[in-house]
Image (cartoon, rainbow, N blue to C red):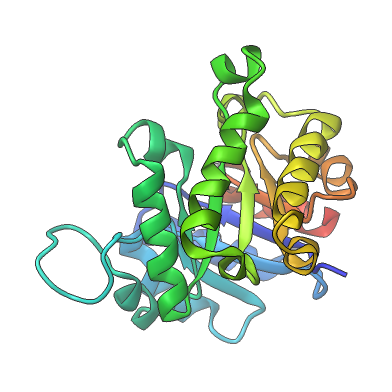
Length: 249
Ligand code: PEP
């Protein structure tokens, strides 16, 4: 039985004051102990969030990491070691905003994934197709290629305790949500692709859905057989809404 996971991606939002307020409201939420809950603040707020969530069931992750491990001359980047030292347990890799706006290639995403795994940070690998690719019938091919880039280079065992987030680009921040059936089709294909290498790994991997998840549509999405929780953007900035999404998982 896979434990449901809900992660809130705060993106490039917040000030110290608004983050303190969000945490205060989150702490007032009744959150289900059965669900694993992660928040992903911007890098500047990681220390503040780690400190204020200490002793709660919420854990903290980063939205990105450097593709090089260790320390050294890479201006403006944070390595997985630094993120871990700051109290992160998780890190997103390959978010579509980084792939598409900042030009991150599959190879860079794979290196970030490998760096995270090597130091014990838990990566959440984001995959997903654009609207153009969906309309051209390329969804499974695109998502399959993004996944294969990690599996073929690092081996299926690298996915053993990892989390994959399927996030159709057209659904992110757009108010458009994939139907539960559309999402389930891709989640099942991801699991089937992993099962061709290892049935055991495929069965254990958690596959989150992301793309305009709200309290109103979460239960239906999370009720699908291969959807193991959600990666939540905009709605994670509202404690009540995020709390309701966690309770739907
Ligand atoms: C995201 O950016 O990961 C995301 C899912 O955003 P939203 O929920 O706002 O669509």
